[in-house]
Length: 304
Image 1 (cartoon, rainbow, N blue to C red):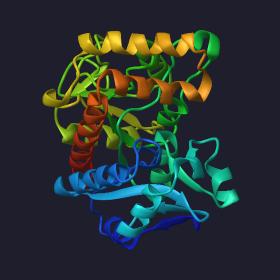
Image 2: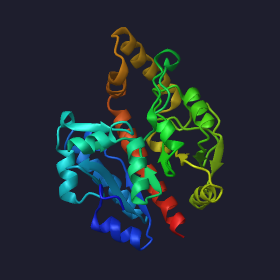
Image 3: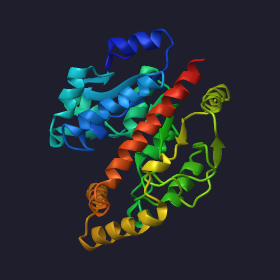
Image 4: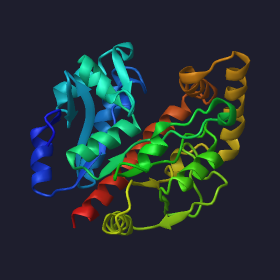
């Protein structure tokens, strides 16, 4: 185990005993919602993993070490730290955060890296990053896609965020050789909505099949991970027909106000929150919990 990795006693014991463990990101805690709601949601997600039969391993960088598995006190300390004081970490800045001794919250890419270093094979998140609209001129493509092609971790998400260019995101994943597996349906989900209008490249209906796919990729010597896209529960979704005009309005406002680069996504998510009167956040929480439960079932199948 690299000395920069600090496993909690619970995670260390679970891995040593071969019990299922699910990695969880920390950006949703530090940059996703205000305190104390962020702490309550983080606790709910960890509880959902436990109820489904696995051990949750929330990951963050604190005091010069990658912490894998946060106890109650550490989780509350992270949740109550102002977002401006927490670095948002991807592959490019993970090492820099450690070198500077800063506090850092892991995105999808950084969580995959840390989970693999710790020996954790399954990771649950809300949605992955992808190809931004207008990327043909801005070249704005999330590092999450490249990470899926490199780190051998099964990532459970509700698809890419619907503010992105979903067809181009799917095309890049195909080019990179990343398996995109829709769970229980033939269509690719679109984060807040169960359907995107795009056919999913692969479909599996059983966590055992997903676990077997990960094992067979290792046996075949295929690098990288696999993306499992899990549709939001029907009772929590905002249907695609309702979301499309809301997303388009938010995008038009961002363009009119000349909002660009890293400021785009926070602006869009806030405007969508406003336009849906908070329903987008409620849906986000529901889909994260749903993904946590599925990831626990996949992790359990892997241990068997």
